[in-house]
Amino acid sequence: MLFSELPLANPLQRAIRAVGYETPTPIQEQSIPSLLEGKDLLGIAQTGTGKTAAFALPILQLLLDSGKFRAPKTCRALILLPTRELAIQVEECFKQYAQFTAISSTCIFGGVGDASQKNCLVRGVDVLVATPGRLLDLIGQKAVSLKALEFFVLDEADRMLDMGFIHDIRKVVALLPQKRQNLFFSATMPDDITKLAATILRPNPVRVEVAPQSTPIERIRQELYHIDKRRKGALLKELLLEHTEMKKVLVFSRTKHGADKIVRVLEKAGVKCAAIHGNKSQTRRQEALKNFKDEKIRVLVATDIAARGIDVDDVSHVFNYDLPDVPETFVHRIGRTARAGKDGIAISFCAPDEEQDLRAIEKLTKIKIPEGDKAIFEKLPPPQKETPESEMRNARGRGFPRREKQAQNSKPVQSPEPSQASPKPPRQQPPKTAQSVQQARPEHNSEQPQKAGFHKRRRNRPGSKARRRMRELSNSNG
Image (cartoon, rainbow, N blue to C red; front, side, top):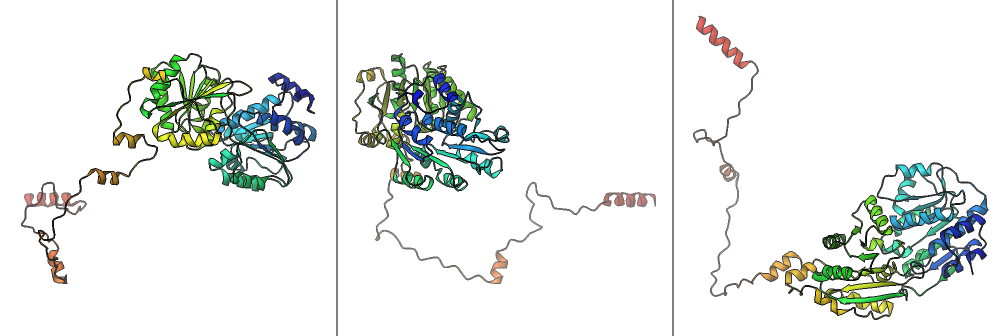
């Protein structure tokens, strides 16, 4: 099947040709006809399989067929997404597909001022792409209403559940009109997601599953390096310097501090890079992502905030600098490469304390990750001997509490034998009486010398100096 064979209007077909689409992906081929019929859809697909076009094109077609016009401070289609980067990306796709139509779209998300977003909603929009928190904020300010909504899309549902958006999603769903078309997309389908889908979708939705859940793309070639934590930065630096074909590299770190540390190591080696994580402002994050897309920087270091939804073309390599705690996150990380039918390479570093995570990943993916070239270790500094303090510092958790650590390091004090120890009778205090309490109170003794810096407080009587001076003058004259 070709896109030209789908029942889409000429403006949409023209936009499809402009972006270079010819053959729909499996999820697009199975979803678009059912959505054009007005059915609810439950889509399960890996990241990078073309889900955005699968729901954007039929929504745009149905908006054109309805002939309705947007009302002030309302939207006709709502796409709810977990992160700012994903929301911006989806809204850009809607603009590309609707570039030859009069359909309007806008994107709202947190982390920036809301004045410009309110201005975009004054006249109303056809397609509103939003994150849950900012959407509820603007609804509370009465800047937008969902009473005229016709289409509701919940994308990356499992990611929203992981990020704690479940309560916000339920609040948004409670504000939606009963008559609407629902689209529910998720890469995985655990029990919690299944229950959430049942509360949103109408009975008997169309189910589209194009690949087994949480299975990595087969075109990705994987490598594994067992190395201690202290030498991970040196290994990453040597691999980047040795392999010049690594032109567009995405490195995943578990923590924000770790991402900044990786950037400092690579910058010292002369590698152009930037970090993107939650502590960065929205402007800095957008700038780093744009420079990475335009190949102005070679390496983008990110936390799991970028594990899903960031669609960057031609990412050649993905590095798992730290293995994730959740095995499914590994699948979404390496899914940043080998997109749109291209090949890719995923390289993972495994420290001794990450062996359990590695076994969980291999159990989920049912793939034994092969070891990389061990000759690279000859160029690295020798491993340093780990001390108990460094092991606790490098561990994921905080290790033992400080008090327990001090108790372990301190030598136990031997108590004297019962025969050697002389028992002391308990000290008996006399009962307190009114006279004893009065004697215990310190009294001021005028004969005792005053302390340095102590001045007796005198009453300030206005005009006393003038009166004394008048008396002195009268006595001297008399």
